[in-house]
Length: 275
Image (cartoon, rainbow, N blue to C red; front, top):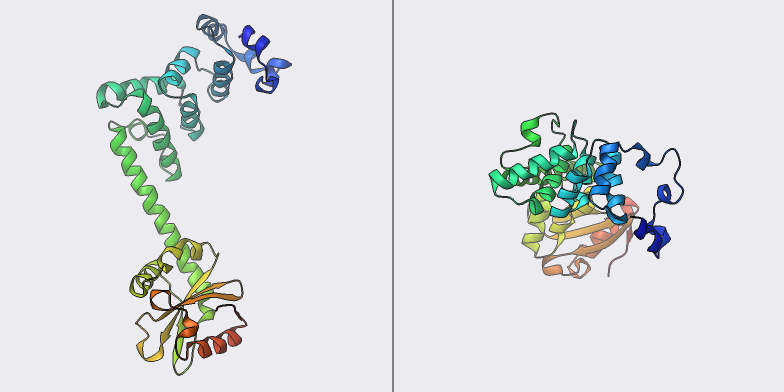
């Protein structure tokens, strides 16, 4: 460590607590046993910095346990697990569990540390009970990781779908009709998928943008065939920026549609900014 400090060319890599140690220096908070381990393992500057980051999250962490996991995987995975905030989680417990996973589940430490960190992060995201030891230390880490990943995706999709519906309610004022055509606002993301599939354009990928409020999608339909996709419109702000029929045909080239769009835009205070 002393040699690293002496010959480190980039002084910015040396933490302030080593350059100007004071009473708050984390090294001074290490126990004698922890200090002995640092000396025993000939800890250098890079590993010391990583260890101190972990020590700040788990002040019981022994360097031997930290170094074991870091060598098998990476120190960031230790931090990732500790940052989840599982009650009573320690580096020692982490080492014991990844060893158990290696032995009983045939999942090596080099893979299980990252897999477990990812799994615990998803449990927190799903608001699971982090005091349930059977959940935190699963008997099949790979299987439970995949189940959690599937659930996270499902929840995200459900949240986006609900947000899409709320946006639809807010955007309902765009709806309008005359004798020939009508403007409809889709209330389900699946309606975008069907519109894009039947008209052979990419509106099906706009679900997230609509849900986030980045744009509004409206459907123009013939008055007598309101259930059949005909023309799709994108609105951003107060501007109609795209209007496409089948196979991305410009809607302004479809008979009578341009006139309808002009009347609709005027009625709703929109600028018609399409070719």
